[in-house]
Amino acid sequence: QVRLVESGGGLVQPGGSLRLSCAASGTFFSTNAMGWYRQPPGKQRELVAVSTDGGSTNYADSVKGRFTISRDNAKNTVYLEMNSLKSEDTAVYYCHAVVMSYTRISRDYWGQGTQVTVSS
Image (cartoon, rainbow, N blue to C red; front, side, top):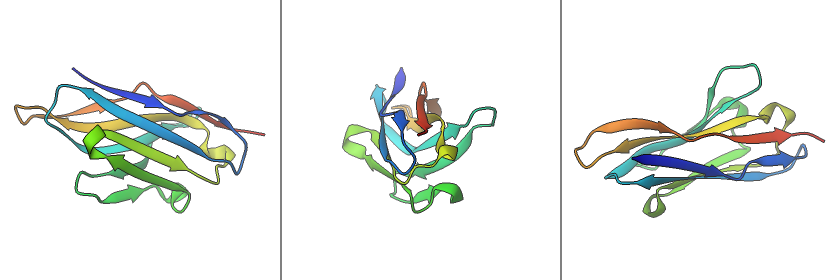
């Protein structure tokens, strides 16, 4: 059983910063792509940023230059550093990972979500 546990959400003022963390736990061979999605109120879930196990990253245009994704492969953990936060960044943020089992089967996993609210 694989679990993704997120932390770091909360309330922040516009222009502020937050750092989200997501750790994968359980029994598995490796984590491949790890990333973050978000779902603003009344909208669909959207990609924020993704990091592959090869080190490449991809960002939504709306967060480029403000958010940075990083990962610690030894800890199976992915981070999202969010700076210059805007009210439109308010959303539930979900961690996502593609995890490979010891039988070399890859599956998608999601975290439970963490609320980020940007408001004065």
